[in-house]
Image 1 (tube, one colour):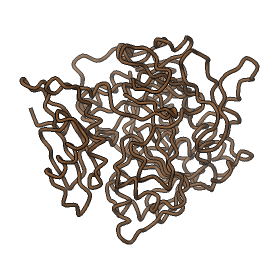
Image 2 (image 1 turned 180 degrees about the vertical axis):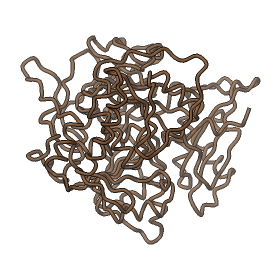
Image 3 (image 1 turned 60 degrees about the horizontal axis):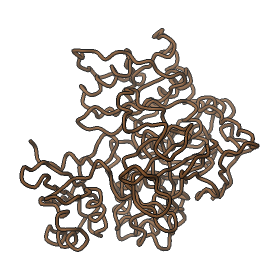
Image 4 (image 1 turned 135 degrees about the vertical axis):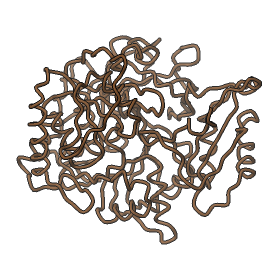
Length: 539
């Protein structure tokens, strides 16, 4: 790993990014950061507060002013310099000012990933203008409802592009009052239901971008590949932290994101140092590498996140990425990244299920049992987290109930906590493993079953690339399980073999009644995750 260029990088903050409050039975990230070896300490009375990181737009403009010819974006065959990107952002700023919006009034962005979309977001950040950035792939009715809920009267697309025609709402939502300092407004995953809007404070984003640079070295001379769409929280690291640090962001066009050969060719040509993506991207790279055993030897840090990784892909990563540290990153849109686990390259194939790792600096965690009692040692329960990067709540505060809280039992006072809904197990060594979702718990013939555990078993089969399990209501059994998998290219995997695999590893009630095997990728949500609802039969 190269040393962070702290002497020249205007975005670098020294010390830890956030202090932690003390409390009973809650775990604080202390000791060594798994990626960098830097220390992260809890708050003490005598320790001075660390300096605040430079604001993201200010860091970007400093790079544009001092290094205008440095590459900021790589897009297809074009390089966009910091000076050119700053000029495009200034043109978008002029457009924003011409709208004569009230102070703090948000705008809605319809932004498919492109240099123009990056410039538009930068303009909003530079103007300190809150903005809602939903997935452009959402249905028009959902987009209209989200923009209305956010109070975004004006909808903008990048210069030279048209905004879509959205339906008028019969009963417009009341305009919310945004907290001072709101910048990004992202959304949770949603395909048919209305996603929740997650407002992020500028200070939270700045703390996150400083942590990302300190951990993965995103500064000048470094190339960071961005696979995720701009509306996905992964882009906070890939795009925004990179631009704040002065690095170069390699934008992967969503139109070609599922083309395995294109993806490998692009990364081979541009030689990124940092790669963060959902497991699907790594599966595509492994497929494209094929028998020729192509390698991406420029990558120093490779992180997978957002979903479970399958056994075959994980086993192939050390050969595909011979010089890379491998990481599993855990986080939620509401909290941003919370845990980081660095894998043992020599034993990656045996790492399933991959631990979610250690809390990031400033992150506190709490595991509660079914009755709400804090877990103090090994055992299983639901994960609560409190991070320096998280939202204070949803934009619609009525949806905070059961999720955001100031006082989980045994957590002490003075912090805002997020109840993740993720079920985890802490082993004797203190490592935490994700085992399922509280909202994925169903009963089949009176037996409690977790559909996420079934997916984990499916993904452990070497011929399974993707898996999704969902439960449909049934008047006799309570729930009927449906599963779908994508098998690896060239595989002859059939339902009989897969059912035998499931039967060896799961209770009888947890073996899905319906099992579909596909050669093509499973449907995805707007954030690139497998769409479990698509597994269910049409009503």
